[in-house]
Amino acid sequence: MKYHAILSAIYRQPHMIRPEKLQEICELVALRSEGEPGDEKRAVNRPTTNFVAVASGNTMREIDSAAASGPPAGYVAIVPLFGTMMQHSMVTAGSGGTSTERLGAELSRLDADPQIGSILLEIHSPGGQVYGAFELADQISAMQTRTVALANSEMASAALLVGTAADAVYATTSASVGSIGVVTVHTDVSQAEQAAGVITTVVAAPPAKAAGHPYAPLPEDVLLEMEMDIEDTYLRFRDAVAAHRGVSSEAVEADFGGGRMLRADQAADVGLVDGIQTKVQLIEAERQRLSRPTRQSNRNKLKLSAATGGVA
Image (cartoon, rainbow, N blue to C red; front, side, top):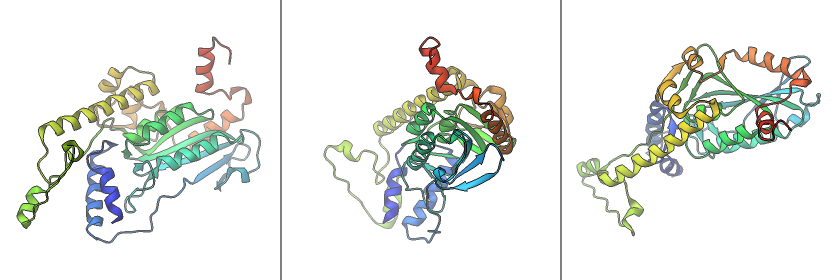
């Protein structure tokens, strides 16, 4: 059944997601795998990008930015990152979501388009898979086109990792950001099988091939291995956010919520975001910036200038 692939992508895999959302997904996928009906119409599609013209401020819904005719670096592209994040397109139909692979391809296309002067990444996501998240964050950090992230209105876990990789990060007044941490799940169905009079025997060579299978209680050594994997991924997550925000790893642990979510004002106070703005305000700010050609430099160019002793 198609949901078996999704189950394997969820259980015993590290996730950078809010625990409540992970539980919701697990329950949903379990029902679907048992044949419960669902809404199959909500597929994961290519990100829909809006373009804002500098001169008029009009928002145009476009699929291919090449169809727009405007001045070089004259458009603000608004790109959504909504719902649960998964690397490919296995996001469950009922929960919606974003494929980090497809989003990365869209950002690459925009970064290469000379008409795009700025990208506004609008985020409303609880996070998702570890797979693909670090790669997307690295891609955004290396982009030549200026990128601004806006939490509108949830930027959690993997979504926060990606958002903080932008040149600037903002949140709307009612937004919440944070959940810097890693979580996984393991289900032991042995008691349920015993009650049903069923015994499943797992045979593997070497034994580690099937370590942590759901048909027996989790052995202590396997649990320890899982905990170490989660800890290693968390440290990588923590250090990446520290680098994105220009703070120490200790500051991330002490000030950025400790795995919890922060209100927008709290996040701004501790420097997790650069300030509180509405979407309209950010678009206008980017339009104004693009109207001043002498101020087209972005963070990457500044980094290059510093690395070459002021020659960029």
